[in-house]
Length: 474
Image (tube, rainbow, N blue to C red; front, side, top):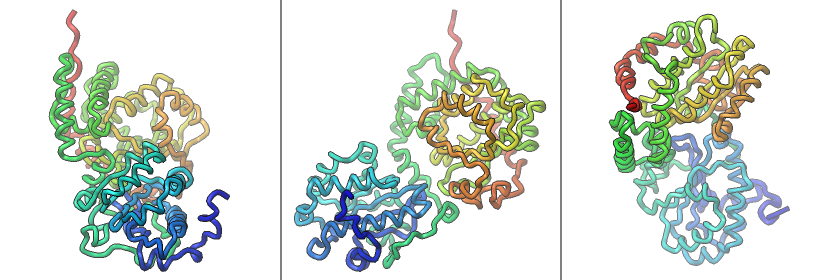
């Protein structure tokens, strides 16, 4: 066995629990997750005493904590962030962190464990840490390297990443929040428990998108310049319109501008969908209220994401055309994107295929499938974070085999097939955020309020229809 020095006889009862956890608090899992539902692992390298505890024992304790943490479903789904506290780090510590030890530690965390490490926040880092990090960078993959944040002693900066009420008092919180004598068994924290957290969307914007007020101002100005430089494009240039495109592309100005160009090109290309596209001109009653083909759940999921439900099998081709479903979907999508929370946290979709049959599938030609995917994936500033497919019959494989030809791999990876196992769905969306038909507790959806919300934005849609590419003069 590789690294038998770590894994041989690796049991909670065989590690130096009292020294590492109770006395020194070298490795601690904080009691509450962060604003995104991620477990917080606090590691105090500077508090480690090599004379009391060998580095290898430190590693062994860390592996036990990881194994136990990964039994937690929320850690599997939302991931983990690490706070590496280097207060007290000295040359005497560095002598033990040889390149081979650093490589071993990184390999275990980065390659050998099913750990979704979403961020590493380094606090109280002294100048000599640069020596360690210079070696560590040789073994870190670029993806993980980008997730490092160097905080120093600026705890206000840390509070933008982790709400201060989730942190111990030594990092700026008034009350201690550590699990001081934590038992090394998995706490049963699921999506349902995480769903009760108060989400901080400003923190989510910073962590997910790298967004700060200054970055937002700067990128809006740059994007506005690109738009004004394109003389044949009439485009809204107010901050609210531009920011949603920037957020969809994590404030990459060039990519956001490219999406805006596609956004207006597709409106020009598919007049059958976008002509006279107003909330008052779509078949809301037939598509939404009566058949419930499209709905938005009133509760967001535990990560702050909007949850939309598409019931493809409930669509009746004899009542309305597929094109009318698309038109309604676009109106609903535009309406959703007016909410900054949706721009930041994104959307998850439940695609319910109950009742899907040949009478539906024959309308989904390759060109129709390509158009629907193009709208969601390339032309709209929608952060589509996951698609959960439920009640999927075998005939759906025909549609999906075609869809995969047009889906980017990133989106394919976000598609989950649930079938009729609603318990699996509850691991992804808290059951108290789901309708009763999916084993949840929500009922009595207010379709009238939904329609009023859409119609209240009628003027926005009228104004939007006036923008686009100018016709070229002959």
